[in-house]
Length: 214
Length: 99
Image (tube, each protein chain N blue to C red):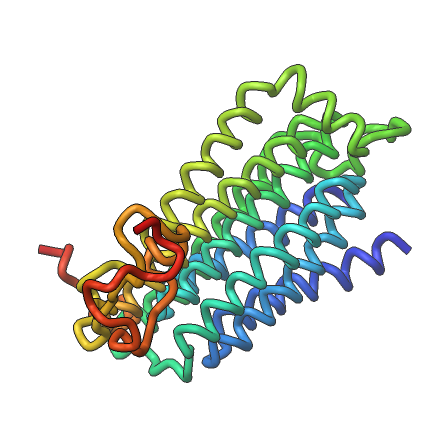
């Protein structure tokens, strides 16, 4: 039973990966990656890593892939013209050589555990309790560094993707803003320029506005 | 199943991802192929963790996932910035940094 499940999940993972590379439409590539990630989560379950499998499905196939789909929809990924450079022939050859080399290196190794089914199963192996205990005791420093890295990446992404002034020359800023009240009074939305008044002549200049002190 | 089979699958996924990074031209698909390579490393980590019976490999698989999420956010931010500046979304045309 485990062998059948393994082969189904492995074929799914490898064909999903091939689909990511081969499909011309970027949207289909993202969908193929979702399929690959779900198959990989099944492989993780077979390896008794249930928490990693759950995190894979929720974080990767859920959140990160939604981000990808948003960006593909925003950028408008169409069909991609295949590369004319020699890399389109050289790349697959290099990949086949790398795969053969890795298989030879891993299967020809002297590790005795590779041909076995792994260590005897301990109840609770791979549960969130064990992983969390490791994260908060033995691997506390990598855990904190990971949180710092997430913070830096979030700030970096905001700085990179933010709308900068001067990037789009055809989009003019709203400068025609006549405050209906004297300075330093009124709401924050008016002060920040959030409210735009289309008829500035409705209130004559010089006359104190409604609600001011004079 | 023997642990070696999982390592073979991991090697296959890694080389498919490497081929994708070399062949494809859109930076978005290149990011997807980087995800493939990181996932292959994850599979190897979890397989070795099963082989030794310790959860340390799974902990580092989770940390690799965190690093992959960071890489995705920054990479997608770069792609959005490129789109806003109306640069070509094509790694063969973006060769200003090559000198």
